[in-house]
Length: 482
Image (cartoon, rainbow, N blue to C red; front, top):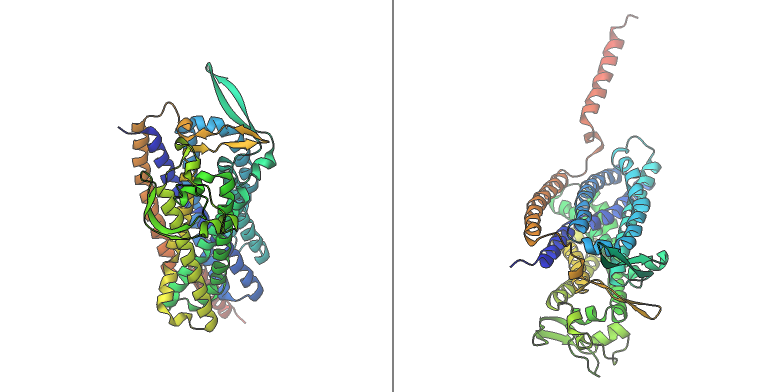
């Protein structure tokens, strides 16, 4: 028998994971585009202008799909998760209103200038528009992450009971807006999420540039873009590792069950706690099969003290424990891919500094496929965060020493939606999103294969018209009597 809760969770996970392909890439490309245009403004080198125009086209395609796929999730809150929406409406309403004011209007106000204003506004005005669109995408992420972080570590609210059709129902209402915004996990999550987006953007630019070097095309543009993309990739991967470490340290205070789950730490002991490099957790037997563990390391990472034991899942009531296998695997996948990206960025920066990057074809091919690794790390991090907080859709918290109720995922469902309806929508979204993905890949591939345009290629029709007008003018001057 189909379970409406699991189907609704799968539907939302599928739609948000597809949507999450685009916003991180838009944010990361926004920074690369801004830096590229800064260099063009400084040098007035046509190659940098060609690069900036090229990345603008890629950014526009990705931005459009991000907006289109993001709208779907807002409808799902009302169709599949009505009880949840009623519970968090006051909190999410304020955060999403702030997103509309600070992000949406900023992006929409300057996007047209970014895409269509190259030959219509002064260069500095276009650079300013590029910066505003980039900041708009960042501000959009800020408020979405704030809302999500509030679910994980709620703050600045109280519970008010309302009577709806004879039934008393709870609703979370904001009592302190800024305490809600700066909840215990928002800054850690925001920094880690934004850095993940910048990593993806840097590796995407490096990927396309490396592809051009391998094919011997657009060499000046590719070499220039690598000068920006590779150092950005190295710095942001290192910072992402640091913020991830800080976020994990916060978990022991705010979500100890999630921390124990992602490390499959079943039993609390008085001994230092090790960290698994990999393994196959068995929740029934409460063990990790084929696991390789580094002694003392989890205690060191969490407490900066290798001798202090970390609480295990046995400290959590069984009904409040999250799944083990999936967050364990996705967390370790994220860490492994992040480490690989640090090594790749460091190797690419070193060989480019030594002047031998173009001769290392294996390294260039690694850069070509690096965006897939960065996207997978972003997706794995999201799965870890969301599955690790189950069975709670809003985590219980403590306000001024008073325990505050949360909301279980099973309590957030709409009462009127059936499993058959959710399954039908999953199949429909599967078909539509598959088509959108194919279109996205086709358009990106077409633009990448074409590459940056030289100045005379940008508007060949108007160029022919100008040549014709000049020829006609010369002919007319020759026919005029002396």
